[in-house]
Image 1: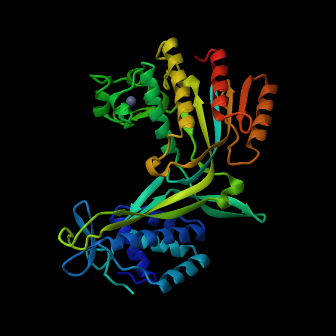
Image 2: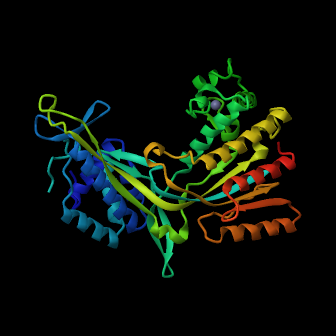
Length: 121
Length: 315
Ligand SMILES: [Zn+2]
């Protein structure tokens, strides 16, 4: 997988894409100034926590949700350092938001049934 | 004749337009909004109610008013499922066999259903037929000057189940905790109704119904608006989050040709609307304006507008 400094955020957004919820990735990718990115990330993290808490735990100890018969692994919650760095970087360069949203829409290069690892700190 | 209504309503602790549930968290619709602070523009995120939501409510009222006036409403619309003859399956219930001519298709749909006559439809087959809605509705957004006081707040709720150790399964909990984001704001929205479009073909601009039927349909489309505003039956979650508040102000303008009242999100919208109508008057165009606020209740203002339309022979 392409390395970025915002792997946790990319994985979280990719999880939403896999569950057919494009709203967060679209709002972050289309934002014209930092405010929508901040609000969207707050909302995405809030929703993601709720989903993660109510997710089922499989035999391998990983969390997953079922959508249209597919088991979609739920990645870890992005770390606070990563979130802070991302928001700081977005404030100085909006291109960062676009990059993260674009990566979230792409296939990860390492096949991992997507969604990513349980923990990604 | 063209009717335009600007409505301001106060809604405390409402959940009129929820957008998504993530786990145990139900979110209120929110939109970015430009406000001015210390001479600078900035974006804030405020609770909002979509035009789709308001339009759905209006059409539900239209169904009821049309049926009680003995006018036709198709089965889908009667159920509040506004597919609007979107494909052969839905159109086939109205006209069989389906004609090839777009004009004939439009005529068949308009004749069969008041909701699709007033609310428009899109038949997405070959040939595609599109009819614009005769009514238009905006999002409901917080009034600008107090937008910074609008809030959306999650409220915690719980459902309890009595469980003893033997009936407890797995890690099921006796309490289900969930959050509902509620909004509190002074909202404004605009509703327009082009009475000249009712019963008239969007393709040929000629009436497809007889004059009497058109007048009846105009009347029910006004009554539906009256009922919707008067009953506050619009938006979601009314059973437990019926908004506390009500209409604080309302303006209705009736003109011969399209004219839209100044948006009620601005504090001077009544004054501005009056001045704009004055200019129209100087061009020799007749108009009617009524304001509900401290002296008049919204129902009185709407009734006056309806009476004016009646006098002018709109129905
Ligand atoms: Zn219908």
